[in-house]
Amino acid sequence: MYSINQKSIVKTKVLNTSAKQLWKKWTTHEGLLTFFGRDNKIELIPGGAFEIYFLMENEYGLRGSETCKVLSYLPNEMLSFSWNAPPSFLKIRNHPHKTWVVITFKPINENQCEVKLTHLGWLDGDEWNKVFEYFENAWEIVLNRFEESIK
Image (cartoon, rainbow, N blue to C red; front, side, top):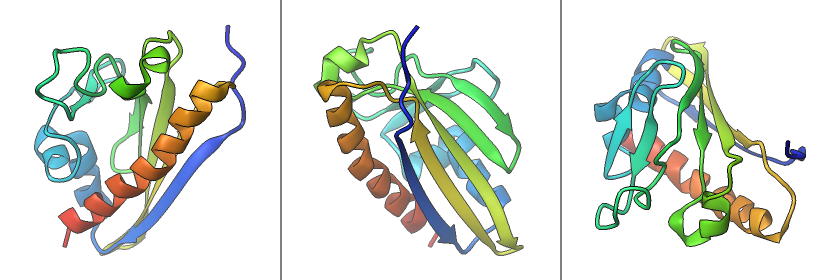
């Protein structure tokens, strides 16, 4: 077993649309294409695929989040999935331990919702720290694109 530390990346945005609309963007093939990756394979069941592909010119296995899975969900409220490192961090990408991401959708009113992304499950070590720093920036970009996709 691995010793998971307490570090986490937390990003929050308040968006001017309903939780239901935001949920669809994160949990459907079509929705994800509007802001995240160039293609994807999403199976919204526990253990189903949550694979987002960024590098289509690479062979399968080095395109994005291959082998990542839906961990759990509450419709229109919460989605969690396993997550791997990009191909540029092969040592961590190939490690048997995967981090995970939890996204919550908290309605403020019927036309406004707080989206909170938490990335956790980190191990200690220099390489893990580099991947943590990478995602500290990457998730900000993803959420900015997410926000732009609803305007």
